[in-house]
Length: 121
Image (cartoon, rainbow, N blue to C red; front, side, top):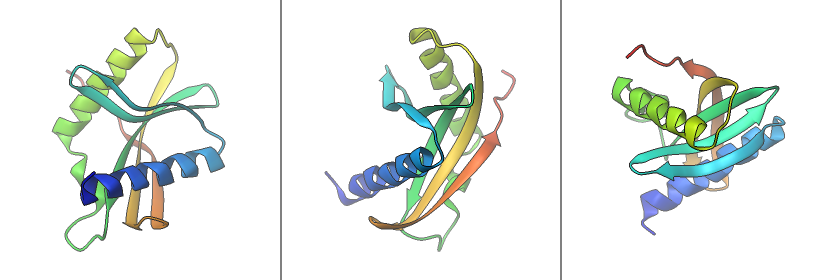
């Protein structure tokens, strides 16, 4: 596995640990269907939470959450819709971002709840 893929996996592991510590139940990690993917699908307090994880070594050039642009949001929303239909899951859905900045074992993790809302297509 390449170094950036290893860093990304470590960041996702840190994100899962963050969510578990806050009482979330992890339903899926790296859910895929065709070209659609969701990093984490979790559940808490009757809410389905779709989490996009962004991992960076540093923030010298930009903040990790800045990579979640309009195109990425549309992709995540399409994937979430496919997940809900495929898995026959019903309920309110929230979209969060978790950022992990640093190195494996020493990340600064930030959980941004309600990071974005589904756009109107």
